[in-house]
Image 1 (cartoon, rainbow, N blue to C red):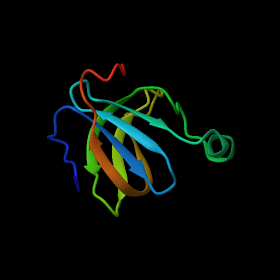
Image 2: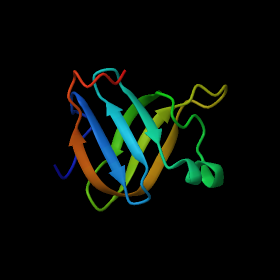
Image 3: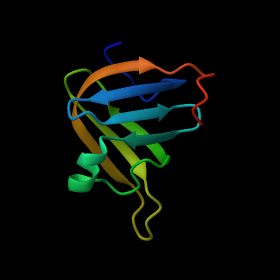
Length: 100
């Protein structure tokens, strides 16, 4: 698979050049970023490892940065963006995988 659009359904695991992994759940409109613990200490992002409201997938294509519009529920901030290093893999996640 080489790209995802905001109209997708189901769940996908997107892996980036830095080793970060984004679980995109289009059915529940949530995403979660997980990464190497050594990287988190250096440059962790707000709410890493937690499911966050996914407002829109702006870009998700192999070789390009993943770009998401998200809602962190910060008072006074309606939405923010989350940008990754270039995407190296996009794979569907089976619905019965046991992942919440």
